[in-house]
Image (cartoon, rainbow, N blue to C red; front, side):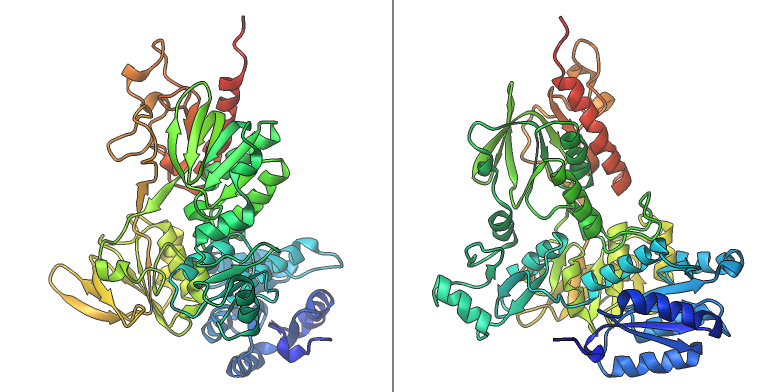
Length: 554
């Protein structure tokens, strides 16, 4: 059955007489099967069309505006953003005016008025152009659209807090999912398998047995296997604890260089970086990349080289010896070398009334899977780091209002300048400095929060509270032999006190006080707490692991 154009998401193009035929041809030839492609002349017709589409409940996936339109093309982009905030916005530029256009487009891009600018194709098979278009359509489909394929089926009645974590896990693993209510045909099918009194939520996919009373960890371990699958005699050359940027980089380099490489992580791959809606300053991604997509690609890369990655498995102990042993939920893995790359975790807010609503309007981390549910609602974000800034910009595509709450006097003290500048251009984002959240509540889910300053407090409506409160080390499972600083971060190399050096020499730059145990990324004392530096440390650690594992010369 052929899908009617009205059912398809829309690609809306505002063209000039000179560019209309080229844009019409390029977009229809590539995307007309899956998108309703509309090419309109002039800014006025585009605004009218967008207004009608939104009023009809249509989804506009991408907006393309010719920079040569009469008037200010960027003003048109701004107006279209207000009409359809979730749409990806691209300014299209002819080659003859590209240099002059850059003077205007670069600063506009820096403050988020558009997602990117592209040269209008000058001939057939402009694959760089279409690669960019496809990436933006993919990002839109991942973050703003309902999945077309029900890869995972979730049955819940809306009162199970664990569903938020399950959805977030599946989104970060790039697995499509669909929710069903208990009275649906899918629910009856699953209840027939597990029994009518099985506790919700139910999760089913991949031909595996349906999981009852599901959590993100039970889904992770149920769908992606267990370390016990490796066998009782298995010994890894390199065991990596943590699947953030540092751990994934080490997995890629370790496995590609022939090391038997295993990765453990209690959650989805990507770590905190995996929850970032858009990372714009990562080397090699000029148009930016979401943390989920970066982690997904790294996971594919590592597994294709032979690394084994097990999610939903939390390390809870390290026993040192000729072969180090890492214990996890229900087993032990042995390895010749261990890399601690477990990153950091968000600090808890510590307000009992809000802790009781985690998963029901209160979320630790960006929880990008929940963003679509915030459409037309009021959102509060607590935190002043880059993750908080990225979350605010992403949620602003959906929410009626977004408030960023920080204790410091400005965002600039802790957030990258490009994010501060972009946030300043959003009328829907309010920054509340020298403020903290002291209370909150609601009937079964979040409805309000209490905000305090030094001299006042007030209640604010809130449908979503996203807590990105800064970092604390997640390595309390390590033995005392692995030295840490006063804050609990792992010491390596020359940062280790000389009393722990061996034969008067410091350990390797990423080696801990225990031979064969290394640390990389945010968990390491003195690290930069950036995605690029964590990736570099993970890759660099593999060379030091090789040196440690190399046979001692006679």
